[in-house]
Length: 283
Image (cartoon, rainbow, N blue to C red):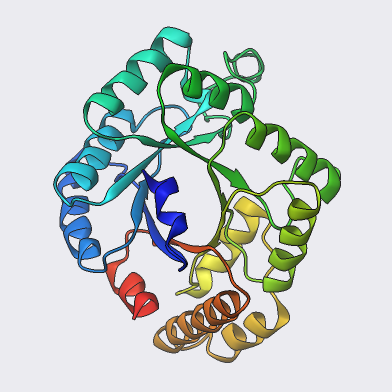
């Protein structure tokens, strides 16, 4: 399982992919995975639509990663996608029987088709509740999400870390951060969680900015801070898409070097299914 990779006296490296939104495009992801395989990541995670709309593709892709690529697969599962305990048990059984023994448990955002009332009355309210039942059902390696710049719904870092500790105590084996561009925020976060007794490994989530249009999307969706240094770099090249991409990759390379120098336990690359970007970072 993935949790066993953290005991080799080196940082681990992982890549995240997502299922294509259109079924007609699903074959493309397998070609992408075949190329990602050549980078020899420790694991590849595959996202899961908040409302379960990609569940079949997610399962098929995770199975391909695990059984065809020979790489540990980490499949996402969101609270919003689970109508009851039976659904969860069946889903976990299918994963386990297909050799997929790693799961990222998430609360998940409210799907666009789900009313406020439906979302408020969902079977699992928090990832910590989901994690407890997963661990009770099978011996999965379970990952959890964390937020170096504080979850958008938390009042403070202290409150966010207190909630995170509850999640870890339910059985989280390691954590993956939301994307961030300010390493100092990550270091402050690590100091706080270690001070409060959270000892599980943490992978730093990085997403290279390869186009100017990405910035507004990233900030809008996650609230992530874009440091002044990166903003200056992107502004300087905003009229040249190729140079914007080059600057974004260089920033991530420097960011990763700094993290590794400070002993980060792992790097998780949000690849956006872009092989060229992943190769540039890995090299």
